[in-house]
Image (cartoon, rainbow over all chains, first blue to last red):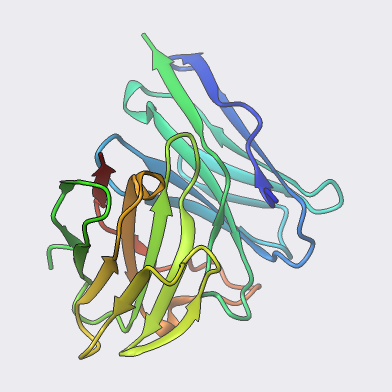
Length: 113
Length: 122
């Protein structure tokens, strides 16, 4: 039962353009969402998060949008840079317990020159 | 502070052997988590500790798996009688208990992952 889904296994974007990574979830109890970035042979690194009472959170080049009614979130990276090439994981949790993250399967982003 | 440290980085073992991995969390973090990541999947939660107490275990953690955090500092994850299906990246993470945000805050999770231990069972 995949409660967090990332349906695009890969994405290729030109440097300077916008990257949009998508994530869907099925469990309506989730109220906190995160994006992690992972380089090969390293652990995931926290990127940005959003709680369910917000619909947008920005941090520099990164913006996360949340559509609760559609159970959908997206990560926008603009402008995309070659160093952004990595695997991006969407994750969800409950703020009440806040102990366990449920991850999606990841999207591999390739930013080309 | 060198972050979350995991040893070994790689482990190759024969089926049926026992293996043990170690995780050293960030020193002031009282929560420690274990996750497993298989090829093409995201990390899956296995278990977590608050100080030395193991507070939650996933159904993924079969009776061949045991985790300990005896003094509330480092943790070990042991797999007995390894099977080929145990081949995966085992990730450890740590955080402060009070680092998790409320819904109306802008703060973020203080979850820091280690680089993982890659286990190959042959």
